[in-house]
Image (cartoon, rainbow, N blue to C red; front, side, top):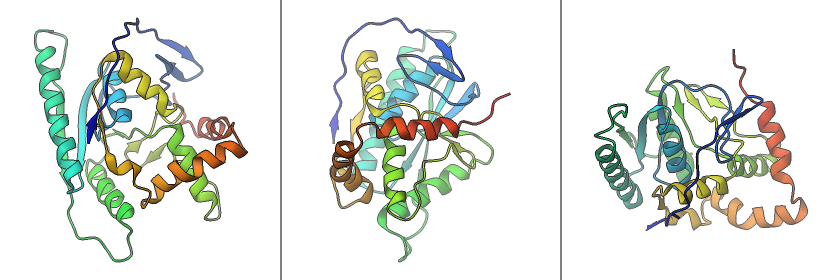
Length: 238
């Protein structure tokens, strides 16, 4: 596991409204978010960018799920240290709120019918769903939606990642991953790299590293195509 390097570019934060998207450094949000929010955070660049982005105007609690691997243990240590340092920095600010970390862990053995990816995902979502009506932000982005659409198309019907799964919402699906990387570099936000993300024995990684480059040769505009589907799936706001 390695740490991502951050740049030192100083920029002013600018907000503007375009339809129902709120844009800051090109980070877009679908739907409305509560003042107090929970964010599913792995320590990777996507979730760390979103945590930093949201913590400027929201009270954020981090949710971390320990998959029982060495990588998960290192990620939990990283997030614990991040929160401690962040709370120390903001301690003297009377308007700042303390950031907390809640962690879950594996509760059962893997079923024979489950792949390793399905097992981890099922256990993760059981943890998230245990919070009842509390909205939890999952940090899926547009690249994830494209990969999901490709995979589901090969299994009969192209589908995007939906906006919500019960209490889990995905308001950042209109953003490319590179936008989160740029945010972390500009804002000096640390993150960690999960080395297993390059292991193509997992289907998601195989699609990302093997199929996506070939897909972009055939259709360089596929992200725009899927973005339209994601935008049409935007939740209604009152």
